[in-house]
Image (cartoon, rainbow, N blue to C red):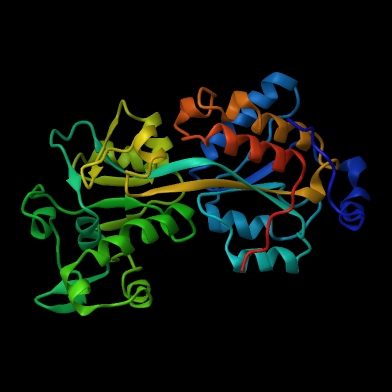
Length: 345
């Protein structure tokens, strides 16, 4: 494995080096609530190993983290952001506009978008993607017409499902989990509907008409704190929650997964993509902050270590579905060398 090289431009370094003597001690990390537990685990391991100040890790959501990350360079800005989707072209342009021009992109592994229910619920739940869309979409087919969603109970959309009220706690629009859920579950579920198939609607129609979650009660935005969803599921055993697999994995004593298309989320089904709603996880780092913000280089070395990322590493123990050995080595070299990401278009 290579060692970290300083690759940021002299101009970028100069912009923050003037205040290097008073630079903050703690690395600042923002972003995805799904990536949060992995980065927090690395932060704790790094602090234990080195005795340095533990990085400050904030769960702001992917979209919120991108805005903070792209504010500019300097000790008053974030060093790293986690993301449960790839950086968008608009976010890349914002970064470039604000002088964040040298960024490394790390695809650290994979995650499944889990739907879970309290263990006190005695039924075994299995949902199709079409069931998910019909339960949570703002508009659905009703008697051959596209209308506001009237369905209140699960058995109204599928007689094989329980006769209980539809109540799902999920992520807000600022969350990468929400973006991924809309793309992987809502859009794909919408495409499975006979109304859409028979109408021969294209991808543009699906995106315009099948992206909105209903706002009349059955879907509740629960914020970026997934612990609140667990509390609500424990209070109502018929409610379902939507979050990353890692959080389900950490709470299997309280929650059980809802299978999707008959497939349960686990490390194997997420890795081989047989679980229908799996996605990559990322973090992004400002290369201009390397060598200026204390301990940032050393923290990245810990994050890229085999101890963290290998199939038997401590992040896998927390639910991360890791990369192949070859892809992991490529990632390690790219991040430790400070390789600049490809422009987003």
